[in-house]
Amino acid sequence: WSCRVLWSKEQVQKDWAIARENAQKTLKGMEGSQKMALIQGSDGGNGYAGFVNMQYIIAGAQALTMNDGPQGYNTYQERLRGTSTQFPALLSVSASFDPETSRQYAEAVVEEFVTKGSNVMLGPDVEVTRATLTGRSFETISGEDPFLGSQLVQPFVIAVQQKGVISTVKHWLDNNQEIYRQTMNVEVGDRAQHEIYMPVFKAAFDAGAAAVMCSYNKVYGEHTCQNSRLLKDLLRRDLGFQGFVMSDWGATHNATASVLGGLDVEMPTGKHVKDISAVFWTNDKLEPAVDEMATNVLSSMHYVGQFDGRFPIEGSLPKYGALDADATSDAHRLVARTVIEDSAVLLKNSKDALPLQTKGLKIAMVGHFCDETEDPQYKQGSVWSGGGSGYVFTNKGTTPLQGVKAHIKDADSIEFSKDASAAASADVAVICVAAHGEEGWDRANFSLPEAADLAASVRKTNSRAKIVVLAAVPGAVTTEWLDGVDAALLMFMPGEQVGPAV
Image: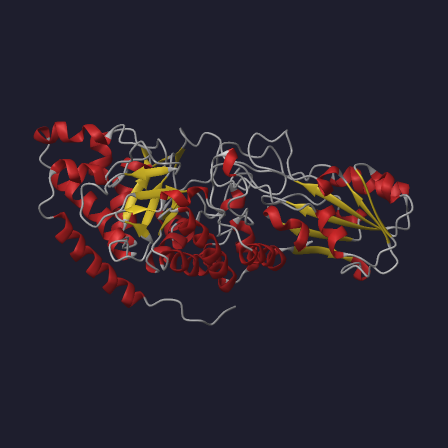
């Protein structure tokens, strides 16, 4: 682990105090309509996931251009495929157990955000996995351990915000499954909240995270984005959060309840909040609440230096023209590959099967995933990357077969087959398998598809060959097939650089 001193809590608090003072100065003299523009998303986002259009109403301000990550810049558009790097999932960072890996990863990702003109990163995802089959288990930097997540999230947040990009930790709170996420209610005791579900958020806020996203689910019977117990008591009073709270996309249900409950920005538009000014006269608490919401947004912008030129702009606008730019680089691909290597888990290595001594060997690559990056059966995502809002479209992916052929030059032969046939005369058979996870759905089970069948088939075809399983998974899987193989290497949704890493 790195011993580098990354931050000072005392300095963070001083910087927030200065940012809030500057925000209050900015707010003075603003009209109600100007304040309202700060607390709701707008249409016309120029290709970004979210857009808060304030640059024409506040001198020196820039629009907030929000985008997914955090595991790479999601272009959303097929025509922009390959202009951002498909990094390994954040679960890979978690599996590295290394804060320095987290820092380097975040630095590479945020550089692509700056190139693309996005000054708000919708990440990192920090939930501690409790419902193990949750569809987005691959997205969390915490894995199943709040202490681990707390150590990894701080260098991530600092690296992002040093570039003038607001880091949005998500999803607050108790968002631990995808199925029924819009309707489910979660009941959690105070001790569990403070010891399991909140510590990674606290660590992020201690490091200065300037935004947090409230989730779709209900907690204690109330939607999180209008839940004063969550947003005021636990978030601000207990954890000392000083940035702004944005809703997940469409997670706002009632304008008055959200404004009074602690929400600061409704996304993706002000569907509910836009009408709040019309009912000011019915509730004398609404106007001061809007002032507080606007102050929180401005404080975050001041804190990361967006009024001081830290984020590159042209005039008062982020560099929208850069949206089409190719933000990738060899340096970023190296980071992606290194993270895969640092996070891979060697489940088994009988008789030193790995690393392969390839000279003169006949190598068989077995299973269709050895030479695939896309699978039409998946609704979202691809073979080596989970699906959903964090997915990054790429045309620069390299398959394990391509990686092996490019790297290994002294083998007698390298053959490929979807079934076990290539293993008939092989000295070693590498079986490629993958499980899949995606936003909106939970996995049906823990199985690793095809692993057992392919291993048994290879063993039947050639009893003397060493069998190595190369698996990509979004989280926990069963390993009933492990006894039938000589070695197994597990990766956590490794992304486009899986081939070179292998």
